[in-house]
Image 1 (cartoon, rainbow, N blue to C red):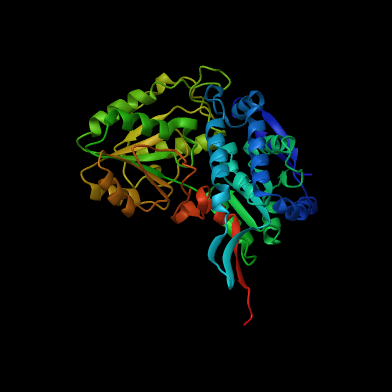
Image 2: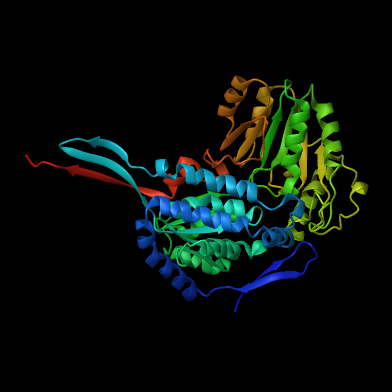
Length: 461
């Protein structure tokens, strides 16, 4: 029997473990989901929407359990109170647009014809969710998929092993039928085998680029729809007319919050030469105010990274950059809790360039590089010099300038004067090796359903 373990970053202990399902047992789960799907889809849309909202509300009632569990599983400090703000915002928004998003597109309704395009649920949707924002990333697909009439099978990352159980518990207690929303524990081989067998009608995966490639390889030839949100190396660009204080506050938070373990976290910053020195000085002061420590301590503002191997990657990238001429500006003596393992001090590097892996590869930790630029053209070239493309953060008072630059940036989302935020009214999508597809917004509902055309001729003469 294969056991899946969550090793807590708090103290390195085995916090939770579960037995992985065999292929046959997993097929049984999918079969129950498929059997339940038709009846679920026949329920009135508003009934499905309300049941999903009740499930979300039930999870909110479990915060006393959920928040410390998150700290133990992936290290986010309890002072931040879990992920309820974003979780609720996304759930409520997709509920508010479900009727419009799923409404038929009527082409003609006359005495002679009815012609329309309806949205039909795919069937069984498989959600493979990540550990860094385990509730918010999962709900991006779970909520609209269930509202649209799909059944959902959820597989969570081993680092957040208990999250799937909590979600299913909340939704089942709220009245969602057991077979409509199920949690599974699977190893990578069984996951790939299920996809390769055509078990699912749609697969949504959030994770690494290599994980996305594995999903595509497994699905090859099955014609299974895939939504992939993969790696990122999101840039910020601070122009000469930017609000300096606001830019520092938002970009440093975007680079270091959640120990930098954010899909759309800021990993590289380009600052106009006129503001560069001031921006760097203020950024170092901002980051130096963190309190690194045990995430269960209510005074801790920066917890450990989710696993010591993730912290190892960050340290290696920093060391490599420094060996090539970069300069680390945050005094390590301010963070004696940095233990060389999962507990990692934040860092800002200058004198960096794109020859360094630190400025090219995903870091996914509380460290960011800052470069001086002279023009929009230089900043644009640097922002696009990446294999990834999830978000870009532009800082200026000129909306037209931001829009013009935004159209040239190879990215899924363009922010002006904000960063590291997922707007549920907009499509969450990426380009290049960041993936394909899109979640949330009306487009998210479209990706979780398929069009069916009705051409009804009322007369034969």
